[in-house]
Length: 169
Length: 68
Image 1 (cartoon, rainbow over the protein chains, first blue to last red):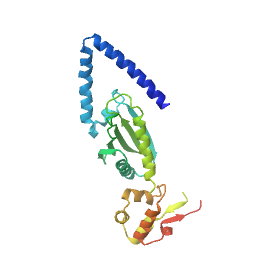
Image 2: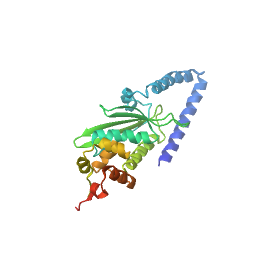
Image 3: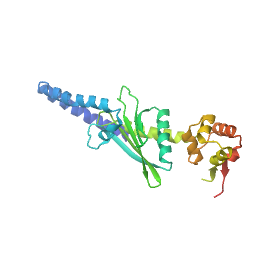
Image 4: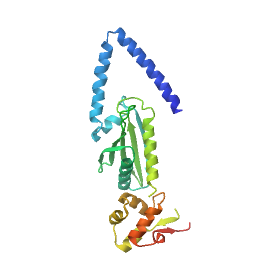
């Protein structure tokens, strides 16, 4: 199913890029220059602010149409502090890099590694308490791109698998 | 779960803190807390051995089966 979605998105992207290139050629590069002038500074801005925890609302906002997001909530019956430190430990022992964390607000910012296919995704984790349950709000966002090609979902499943494995003490 | 972890009882008897045990055993405090609360999925023989060695006790002192 995911492969089918990826192929559909690739076809749509190809068609859009083809028409943009065609239109840009016929308009003597003005469109190309305009596109670069708009998107390149945004891309640079995202690179600069990606490591700042304060920009979490900007990256995970549903109004930010330039980042692909995957959000999910999980319930645990650990204490809030234990879960917070456990997640940091799991992230450090897996392929993610813990960039910043705020113990007071129970916020964690981690990034996945850069590769030739990706700039790496931002992973925001917030631990909330709701009655007796402790909820982990997970959000993985792309740095710049409306579609993550399944990498956001992979980040979640990798983290959950690593977390489960880490409970064998 | 019918298996109860009595790590807190043994620690209290030995007058030892979780952090001290963590240093002796080489298991993080977070993991020992999870184990103490009985929220862990499983315990490795190597961890059990290290805990028993540090606390000078038997596995049965730490783990207890209570029928439902």
